[in-house]
Length: 106
Image (tube, rainbow, N blue to C red):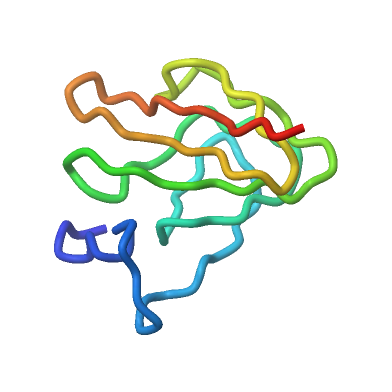
């Protein structure tokens, strides 16, 4: 994705922006908007950075038993997502790693 499309990942959105999309979990995922719904139970190991600099995305897992992310790709620490709760991921372009935290409201 071109850096010219960075607004798709901005935390400030308007009604003219793309709505959150849904993707299936896989070893590698490529979110297309700031907020992405993730279905399935395949462990995510790599998230394709949407821009060349730092950015933040929110993943919302919709499966009843989401699988923990793994560190075999570009994710810094294994994250255990919770169903229907946001998992924030921040990309560090220096380390080329995603750092994240899963909200735990239970």
